[in-house]
Image 1 (cartoon, rainbow, N blue to C red):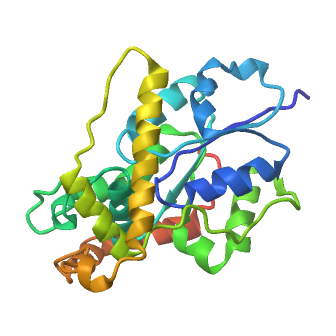
Image 2: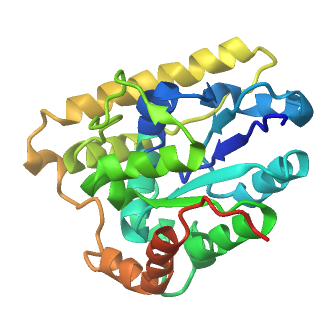
Length: 278
């Protein structure tokens, strides 16, 4: 009997342990060929009938997820998908901290507004149920949905779920308890946000990719230096205004998406991602 080789895609969400998986777990899985994030689009050059081993591709999507799922399933109808979720208030806060570290200066209250829906992120964009059901509808195999909280409370179980889904095992080189890309503290982020408000980032667009890349890396390095400097400044000088002015906004976000989060947790428990659809 001819052996059937599979192809799996880890599609995010961003800020849900993606870097940890891409650096520490996926490269150390046995019996599968892992393609790093920068080579994600190489899947488009694969031919399903010519696969000689199982493949795993990894990237992160929130906006644009559905389009990527359509592209993947158009080429590989039997593809498996891994999708990680995080409680909404924690996820959007982590996104905001990352946004500041990437030149952002917007106030958190303008990022998402669950009361009147006038934020940069619209309420419906954070409905993970819609994303999960879209993946399930497009794929022949149920996706593996994992909550970030499982990695925090029981990393061994978290990794075991991935191994069961992929038919892999984790080699001894893997570090299962590593924090990757730890965020700046609140004082540093406030200082960095203020810097971004004064020194606006302007992307240069030349025909030379190397020059564009050098400019971006220079700004990243500059922001890192500014953020690091903020660590040593007195709180009285930096924290005149809190990172989040509305102290109740996170609890309102958590309450607004409670049903959606409960769905994610229940789906993760019931559907371990190993059953094929009839």
